[in-house]
Image 1 (cartoon, helix red, strand yellow):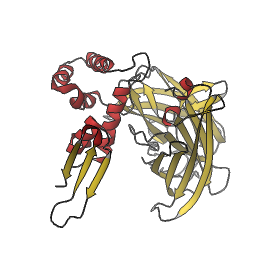
Image 2 (cartoon, helix red, strand yellow):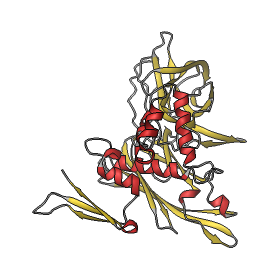
Image 3 (cartoon, helix red, strand yellow):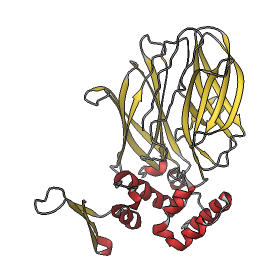
Image 4 (cartoon, one colour):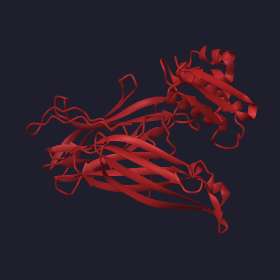
Length: 399
């Protein structure tokens, strides 16, 4: 996912500007095995921009082994920065991490995460950032690539990127690195920095925009700022939104309601206990076809009231839950994980989940073996998927 920065158009003291877009590092709905987010700020080093990188690793995605009566997981993180064309490696940092859990329940809990944070001072340019997480016991690794554009904080007034807040413990802020909220949440907390060349009062406006670019929430406040760096932490009330993708916009406006400067960030409102990949209920219902069949699907689609339709959808998946006493429905998560994988890897002329490969992958899971034939002289390219457990193989010919 790209963090896209739109250059501010500043002339004298108060001028019009575009609101910047901070999309986050990972595409909304994607989950590469861990969460990562990045934000850029004004650096105290001349000619540099500070980039903070936040990483959140779910315990459940690591291999824990028993160690001295407890459970331990070990992994390494490699964070690399390349030039825009990814020709030259400009900077690389590697570190090791260890997690110790008191028991198996803690090690496998859906609610436990390891947080990490690194800060870098870089020249304000465009970079390709690659983050690789390697689990030392399972030998699995997860990789995220993102294009990051660092802006030059040399204007009279500017905003840093936004970071959402998950929780606050005493004076410690735990960031919401996944950029998700529950559809039942009634508040939205975040922080950012305002850089000003003088003491002044700014008219700030906060807005929430839905996927149709309609403003569904707005709140204005007069904010006193000092010359230099101003840390802004705010909690918006009454922000409960339904399932879907949204954008929080923070901007300073003049007396004519024109934008002086601003920034924004996308987030997803998800169903409690459901994967963040489900951002559109109608689409999620359509994608159920391989497990529910057309009858159940039609019953849900025929319900006109959106809340009733959502409840019917939740009731269906509850009936498939192998462990109702836990928050996470393993069948539900695995099914939509396969849908997301199919959409990412098997997209052709239409969505990946609709392709033959997507259907087989969603229904049967990953094959035991794949035999590829990309350059056959007497046939079109094809590949064979082998499923040894059911003694089946599937041929896919490239049209």
